[in-house]
Amino acid sequence: MLTKEQIAIVGSTGNIKINAVAGSGKTTTLIEYARARPGEKILYLAFNKAVKLEAEKKFSEKGVANVRIETAHSLAYSQIVRRANYTLKNDGYKTPEVVEILGLNSYTGRHTEYILATHINAFISYFCNSDKAKVQELNYEEVVNDPAAKQFALNFKQEISHQTRLFLDKMNKGEIPILHDFYLKKFQLGKPVLYFDTILFDEGQDASEAMLDIFLSQKATKVIVGDSHQQIYGWRYAVNSLEKVDYPSYDLSTSFRFNQEIAQLAKEIVSWKRHLKTSSDIKITGIGKPGKIKTRAVIARTNAGLLVKAIELLIEKKEIGSVYFEGRIENYTYASEGASIYDVLNLYSGEKEWIRDKMIASMKDMDELEEYIENTGDSQLRMLVEVVKEYGKKIPGYIKKLKECHLDHDDKDKADMIFSTVHRCKGMEYDEVTLADDFITEEKILDLADEQEAAGMAKLAEEVNLLYVAVTRTKSELYISEEIVPEPSKGKGIKIFSNKKKSEKPAGKNYNYQSVREKNKSAYAPWSKEEDKKLAALFQKGSSVKDLAKVLERTTGSVVSRIKKLQLDPDE
Image 1 (spheres, rainbow, N blue to C red):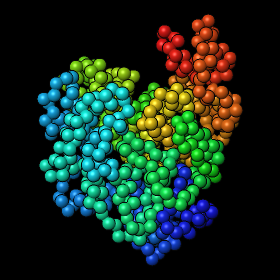
Image 2: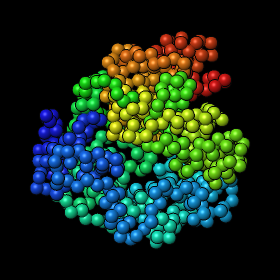
Image 3: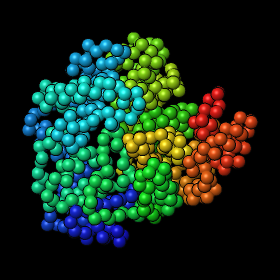
């Protein structure tokens, strides 16, 4: 039985956009939309291959035969790659490969050639995902957030742009294998005509400008579906198409996945965006009924956070016996540029003769590697460094143990615990979810918000989205660290645990965000100059953090964070 919101969408006419919260039955709605138009030829553009296969199964089961399901890349592949007989580079170009292809070895300076190659790689991705016709129409440095990396990009602005154009030209001529983003870009620039009556564009909040340009240029009736607060691919230059079009707006605000307590938590997390001066509005109601716990998952923000949690549960605490990592487990031990955690470990241990990656092998020591990371903003490589520093030479044994306990995909549901990052579990759901503690907190947002430019604000907003997506993967129970949420209270299905003492198991306390707000109203307000002066004076007199929190009506975590920010403690 359809909800009133679903019925309104099925009966709509013309171009529309649909704001669909997590678990709100958007595929069911689109199936019924298509079923109500049997005489139309309809294209359903799915976000990726996994979503495409799932959609094909669901539409087939419902007997809907007038819908063709594709991804933007699959459409482009048939038109560009097959016709031109290009060869594909499926795993992308590694930094040393870019250096070799473009002959960048002549540059002086410590690892300048590798830093340049990393920026060129990023600029290629930026251009291919944009809607621009020429590289020169883009200012690459505007999408570089890390200060040192941005400065390098400015210093080498002309060279990065020139070498990016050379690399793209080599792909265009077929001199080197092409990237997936490249053939989609070539498809977009060719101004394709898609002969359909209606086009359904799923996951519109994570569309690239190139995808959106292809979609909007068609004469067909257009339906964009997405959730503005699930935009998590900004790092791949995605744009929120729901905000780009002025179509009549419809909502799917009822989630069948989880209950109202989870919905309220999700709503409260999204509300953090008000500190970033961006939209924090969301209509969401949870009517899901908790069921038997069959699938349990740990979700982390980062690969490093996930590996740490897996090592903790499987090896240190021995709480689980079998595991499954969404995607291949090996993917969690590599950075995007191809360097493995073992390469970083061998550099850390001084055993350079065992390093396989050419770029890592060129580093004198960890200090040089971390300098390279600062100049490139390579967050994935930074994560591997963090894990290596945490576990050192124990890493090979730990990963070997994880692999021994890893089940095949067909046995995924039999695993004691499924491990995934937010990006890999997008669109999935589990009966029980435990969050790693590497997500953003409201306290951190308050500390950082005043210092950010527009790009930084957008990045922080996406961090909020990542937490929102993670929380809404659960169907029944959610375990969340008190480092992410400040105080435990009453709430069905949400349980608080502490990571401060790793030997402790989840406390199992219930949580209700509205109670926390009432109890700690002032804890989330920006610090005033008067409060800073009062904090400094009391701290210098020797007042404890607990006493400071009581006097200033703040949480202890907020006080500690402010002490660090004001550099009041010389030992920090």
